[in-house]
Image 1 (cartoon, rainbow, N blue to C red):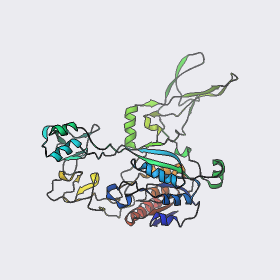
Image 2 (tube, one colour):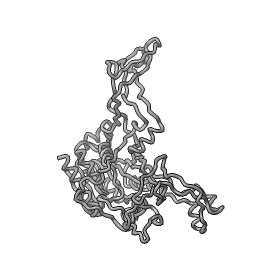
Image 3 (spheres, rainbow, N blue to C red):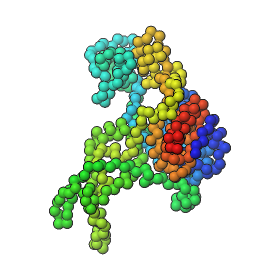
Image 4 (cartoon, rainbow, N blue to C red):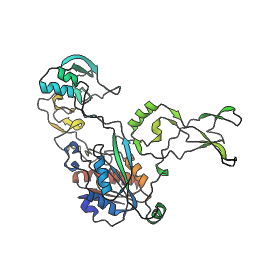
Length: 434
């Protein structure tokens, strides 16, 4: 079942019954005024979280995304509302774009100094040539060059003052979003609570990180007496592969970040363990067989790696036209409507009178999360057939994930333009499952 509501979440939640929701998984405003959006001027108030607390069943979990700069405000307000902070989940991704200010160039611009061109270099980021832009230029580090060959001019500081600040900037590359993991307090112990309300725990087994290697593993171990031997255990009676998966961690990578981690960690195999244990009496007990997670790969296999499909954002929006949400496109979301070129700095446009707009999209919500990621979070904290609520539904990623996983869903969205997108995406996913 799905219930999609239009309006202010504080007023809408007040109409819900006490102790009626199993979990809340949401991506609320971060309080960063992201892309100039008025709805992102602050993190949700304590009053909103108090209403969320009221409607959650005792022991029900709240998972709330937040920004790295304003996580403290989000977590404190959730705690002040009466929630128990249980953990912080870190979602790490590799596609963040640094919005840093080149201080040396800024000093030269302030002083009116000319910077001498001393060479040219190819546009690369982390060893990779950036994608060619529609106007033939290449993008890197907040600079778009109009050169068609992918090279950019290298300049040197134009004064002693700017030379002091060569190589200095103002921001790190954004590569993670913290998720507040909180729980509604309950009386008694967790066993009593799950029996009464069905909430209070997290579903470890369904959230395990499964990584199976189909190739046999050749393992070296010791027999009694110290003799070493090698054997392919995967296809013998002595081998017990542990395919349950690894315990879910409080850090998650996207595919790109996982690849970077694997490049640094290298490839390793899980270490087999002979299940024979010596007890104080001197006796040995256990199966004597070899057990292992039966996997090999990089370090990312210890963590969940959500895969965001390119079509994920626009699924269900076939009948929607591409739309720009305004004429104040910023950063990577900026496009000149005159020539169709995606730019970062206005001075880089070749048009005499550029018209800067948001890049037209069918789903133009600025903070769409991968559906697989949201489903993973839902499964972690929601009992089977439970009700999931998202008071800040946006374009409906949580609802889409709930439909995919067979959960009931209540979503609330204040902005009607986003509500229409959410309805289409959720209805499409619901139709695929029924």
